Image (cartoon, rainbow, N blue to C red):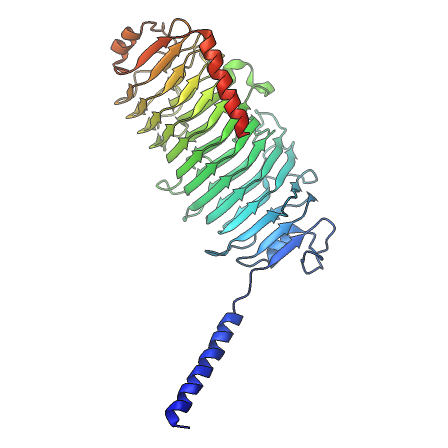
Amino acid sequence: MKPYAFLSLVLVVQTLVCTTKTFAAIPSPRKYYVAINGSDNNPGSISAPFQTINIALGHAVPGDQVIVRAGTYHQEVKFPKSGEPGKTISLQGYPGEKPVIDGSRITVAGWQALVTVNNVSYVTIDGFDICNLHSSAVNTDPQGMAIIGSGQHITVKNCNIYNIKNNTTLAQGRSGHAILAIGTGKTPISNLLITGCTVHDTQTGTSENVTLAGNIDGFIFSHNQVYDTENIGVIVAGGDGLNPHGAVESNYARNGVIRDNIFHHNTMTRTPETWGPDRFGAISIYVCGGANTLIERNIVYESDRGIGLVSESKIYPTRTTTVKNNLVYNCYRAGIYMGDYLNYTIAGTKNCAVLDNTLFQNNRVPGAFGEIEGEIRLTEHCDSNVVQHNSIYAGPKDVLVHKYTLTGSHNLINHNRYFSTGQPQWIWNSTNGAPITDFQTWKKISGQDAGSSHETVSPKFYSNLLRKWKRSLQSKI
């Protein structure tokens, strides 16, 4: 054999050996199983499953799945490690089965969650009931799920979160969360997806049911249902309350989408300490010091308030947020609320847009000052906002637009369609002043709505609309 031929043969053999070794070094993704009747001494196969979810998660490496069979698991679940790009660690229910993570045997100490994702990335939880975590102790915060620290590509889907309740009084600081996401690290939580979930039957006190706050940059909250809850449905917030030591330039939730969700009966009406209808202030979809959020195609009904672009902060205005193509009807108070809480905060609402929404017969009870808040409510420090192309249907004693104070500038209200079955009402720069009942006078005094219209319609017209929306709603549930 010639020397060069022998050398070529050696190179080919070496290449094949190296290639074989390379492929052998890449393990295939594994599936670990968990069952109520399993054992943590088992290997985690489908025929010999683990019993504890955390044991299975401890074995999982990037790309692996932990699959949980039906049954009730009285366990706290914590993701111990991250996946990798293209290799998510997935915790999921067995197909066709519904595992339950149940907190009824847990004594809550401090802020405590049934499922915790702390400083991990590329993880998914899919298809669980997360429920029955109660506390009657002061200074506690029971949580269905907590996502904290930093992390990216975190997905929560097809979960049913309910019966998360703090049983202390409001005066004692009652607080709880169904889902609490707080970005507390220098690197933001990003690519957070919450979809296909239900949140219901909670008692969260002065806290929210779904909280997105602190250093969060990039989230989607879509195709969820939030109902029969105490207080706020979902909030996108600055972190000056929950993360007080965060860097000012990044300590707020931003660049997110809230889309195609259904909210109803998010309310304080069943809370004994609210002292009457004038305290029915829960907002179903609330941006409070957050920014760059798109809120679209949601349905909100029979809650305290519909959608709020409001700031409780002295640092962060609610800003650069768009609310479009939403339906809000039959709420106790305002349909869409903008500005600061009166005589409370100063950051305001800036550069937001309210477009193509439908508001129908909200304001069923008076507000805190005995006033009608308005289908569109603008309080203090609203600047450079746009309210256009909305269809607004007043109830019998309703106010179509109510601007409370002389503060705020460069706001544009125009090209809206107003409807009423009787005398229409608007209020401009007054909390409790006499309403304006003539459309042309309203346009002159406010300097707004030059291209808008008002139409008086029959009660039957209203009834037909409501019937249509309810039929449409049933098809989405």
